[in-house]
Amino acid sequence: MILQGQSQANLNVFVGCKWVLLLAGLWLYVENYSLQPELLLLVILAQTVFTLAYLQVQNKWGWLATAALDLTCTLYLLSRTGGLSSTLLVYSFAGILPWKRLMGWKQYYAIVLVYAALLPLLLRWLPGPTGELEASRYWGYGFLVFIFCVLIGLYQHSRLAVYHTYRQLAMIYRARTYAASSSSIERIPYTEELLRKALDGRDVLLILPVWLESGKVQSWKHTYYANYLQQNPPSFPKQYANLPSPTGERVPYYIKTLTDRRGSHYGWLLVRANKHELTTIHKMYIQLMLIRLEADHFVQEELAHSAEAAVSLERETIAQNIHDGIAQELFFISIQLFQLKQALPQDAREQMLPHVLEVERKVKESHRDIRQFITELKDEKRKINLHHAIEKLLHRVTEHTKVRPVFVKNGWTPHEQLEVEEAIYHLVEEAANNVVKHAQASHLYVNIEVTSVQWEVTVKDDGRGMAIREELTQRHFGLEGMENRIKALNGTLVVQSEPGAGTTVTACIPRERGVGFV
Image (cartoon, rainbow, N blue to C red; front, side, top):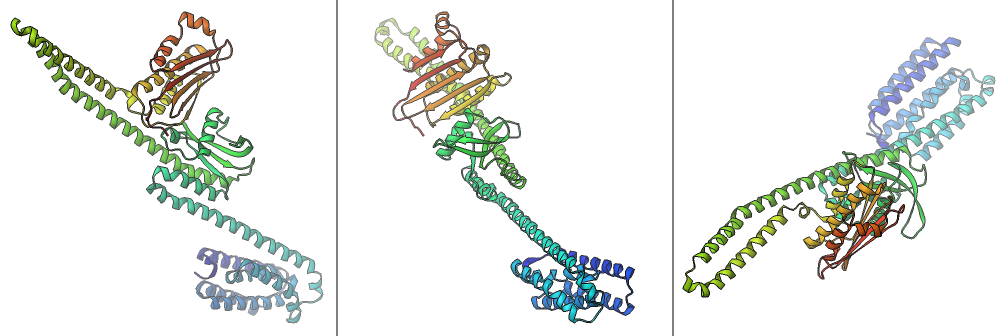
């Protein structure tokens, strides 16, 4: 509209307040003094004209002229109604409010102080019932000026705070279009940067362990805090705590556990802040941004489940087609070879039998390979990566127990032999079931670390432990089966346990050269 971008609503409020102050001041004056009807009509008419002018003027100079004439008429009215003791003194200060639209805050404060200093002098020069009574009102007048300055100071501060909040909310609202069009790889750092701006430049980390298991490692700092929080989960959904940094120093953080719509936690938000440093507004910004993040996480989970179901269906279809096609044909060929072998004439049997047996062997090998391939296609562990499969396994095994699983992954490999993945999966499955059934533990720790050289799998609990020699002698808890499975892959298995000290199972499995590693 005009300067400072004030809205029409603010102007309407200003005009309404001026009318209220004018009528209230006139009513108080008439209650104690007599007022000429001509002066009353003149005041009402002038206020009406200025109201229309304020509402209609659309340029700087017209606004300046209107405000100056309004102030001049107000000074005359004060001089006729008691000067500094006038009941319209508050109304007169309302007359300098429009000047703010023409200048900045520093200039406006200067105008207010100049007006407050000159008003007593101007009233002495103007004709009217002033004089001795005004001298006794100086202290009250000074208090009125002080209150007026405090009020406009509070208005300035609240206006700046509201404007800052509005800008932050607008920034968060505009981010929805970017979040909708960007990839998941770009969305997390963008959300961190957006939160950093909304939280006045504080360091922000979004720790999402699901990214680590999919190979999308954000940074070494994210990986460090992801591993630390998985091993030392926060006690409360929202809390302040001092966390050890990678360099060993204790750093204050505000920690918020991220939960999805099912109530399962999928990560943490870390904001570097001292205790009670974040305001309610800051936490509101965080909540608004996390609503978008949680929605994105939900969509990604649904897409992943849909993709997993589609892959499973496709594998089942391919496996069934192979079974009904190639596998059946090989079976019929093997039957025909058997019939051919039985029907060989005696004189040609010695010469032809070795060739028939060789073909029969090849057919059986092909049939076995095809069936193995069908089995692998239908095997659930091949549909998802090993880390995800183990995480689902731990959730399933401990779901209705008092055991709390803690799963830590270090390193990631896009490809691994099926036998190795099966051995690791069954090792964790066997050890986890032992913990739930026999250990009387409250925590189950599973750590899987993969390098270019080997896999190292550690399953640890804080349960009652056992006498390891006795258990090995009695072949309890499937230890022998675990050891045989690992040794078949040239690996080693070590079981450490003492009564009352929990149990630790550690397996090391060498990897083939050239297998991918991240």
